[in-house]
Image 1 (tube, helix red, strand yellow):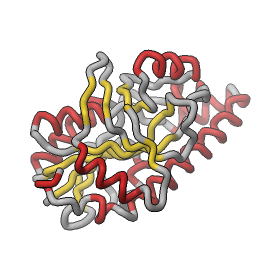
Image 2 (cartoon, helix red, strand yellow; image 1 turned 30 degrees about the vertical axis):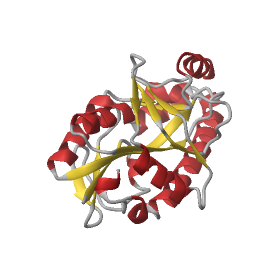
Image 3 (cartoon, helix red, strand yellow; image 1 turned 45 degrees about the horizontal axis):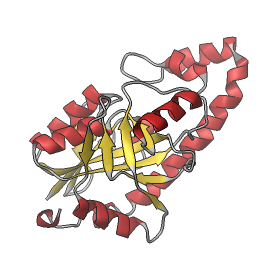
Image 4 (cartoon, rainbow, N blue to C red; image 1 turned 45 degrees about the vertical axis):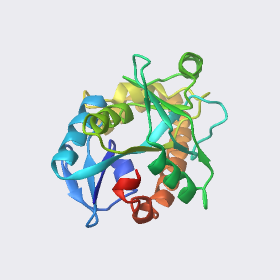
Length: 239
């Protein structure tokens, strides 16, 4: 039984494997786990999910970081979504058996937060915008890929999990350097980032703070990664 995992960013990818994976491609990291490096955004995540299904995956995981919408969440917190909310407000439920299995397993060594995960069609940069989304959706956190992956799973009648750790807290404004440094694929271009910092040195403390938050999120993902074999051991008929 093959489990497919979709990862958007190379930093998130490094929490699962040291193998080199080209964007848009996938590779088996164990006999039963196949990992796809999608790149950021819904379109990339959808294509990666379809690739994993074509490779024989019978369940899908959305893996990576998220932005907090709930003020109760801090960087490094693990969110195991029990509901997804797309950009139009449509809710998608998570099958309870695999979710409960994952929650029980991970709760033995981490605090597991549940709740809704909202879809973002772009970077939500300010604490004010996150607060507004929280009011509108009631979601605990948001990301750009999980909904697209969940919809592919739903179309193929496959179980799905969203495993996300918090990077930026709800009240944090992202440094302007981040948006100025992104390319059309949602990747940070180092040259653009360095040029922006040179022109706007006041951005540097915010970038350092964001880096610390992101490292906390990655460290939690690494802890969860150690349980992947157990996490994916639930028989398919029980999902």
